[in-house]
Amino acid sequence: MKLTGFELRRVAMPLVAPFRTSFGTEHARDVLLVRALADDVEGWGECVAGLAPLYSSEYVDGVAQVLRSHLLPAVLAAGELTAAEVARVLQPFQGHRMAKGAVEMAVLDAELRAAGMPLAAYLGAVRDAVDCGVSVGIADDVGRLLDEVAGYLGEGYRRIKLKIAPGWDVEPVAAVRDEFGDELLLQVDANAAYTLADARHLALLDAFDLLLIEQPLPEEDLRGHAALAAKLATPVCLDESIVSAAAAVDAIALGACSVVNVKAGRVGGYLEARRVADVCAAHGVPVWAGGMLETGLGRAANVALAALPNFVLPGDTSASRRYYAQDLTTPFELRDGRLAVPRGAGLGVAPLPDVLEELTTAVEQVTAR
Ligand code: OSB
Ligand code: MG
Image (spheres, rainbow, N blue to C red):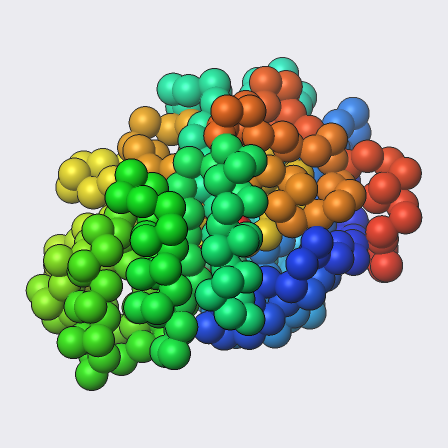
């Protein structure tokens, strides 16, 4: 594919309700979209970085800066290239995986559209619909949490993930288990809010038969996760720590996790995400598709990823309405607790032109120099 340029676009996406985690409360996403332009085709990438570097070191203004000054000029200077070659062209630049992932996604969408191939088929999907869970933020009180969970279960979600933090862990988990019964697939996500000194407290969660506890300790603390995993009956799953397939291999070898949350943005793109799933499969470690409050663009790609063979647990691939009153694409709707894998070429979805125009706050062109 010979690219003629890129467009960087910022889109204001208000959330239907504030989303509170151990690292902060999000009211809206300031989404950075990367549009890859070629002669006869275009492709869309969505960057998952948040407003502030709270989940990871990347944040949306920083991503825009590294894209315009470094990454996009390098891709344009490389001339003819395939999406699979984008990571090699960007390899000299350290880190900035969310930025790299957004570029690769845009080039991949353009390439697959030109070839008439759906992303799911390209990645090796084995399902045409995926089981969906929902990630439930920290609530003001347990009563409100139970109402929220009841609403999601009424919509058909097949698994509930509760965000936890010190002071909001055993009590809400016990209440949800008590209210909705032993059959409910239930897991928790700490977003790195605990320390190894909390091991005895976290072991209290063992009583609730959770599918997993996600990222209890800081991103770089693989040894701490291994030590914690040895003290818990609840399986430890890693999110923030798994920044590459190599990191997944190390984490598994150390005994730091027995489940992995796969997010393309966090590992530098959907191709590396597939490698993460592959190395996990080789070690008998199940994976599931995480999410970063994506619009319909990122959601389409996450659903395609979740259709791969080793994605055996329901993902954080929720319907559009769980996040946005107006999605950027035709909304994803839950059917019997599942989302259909898009069938069209590339992402299989594109921004609705009027909605995109209305929500766009800034546009910038980056062309070859
Ligand atoms: O840790 O999985 C996480 C959202 C933003 C940043 C980090 C996380 C999340 C979620 C929501 O849990 C997942 C989703 O529904 O997209
Ligand atoms: Mg997480």
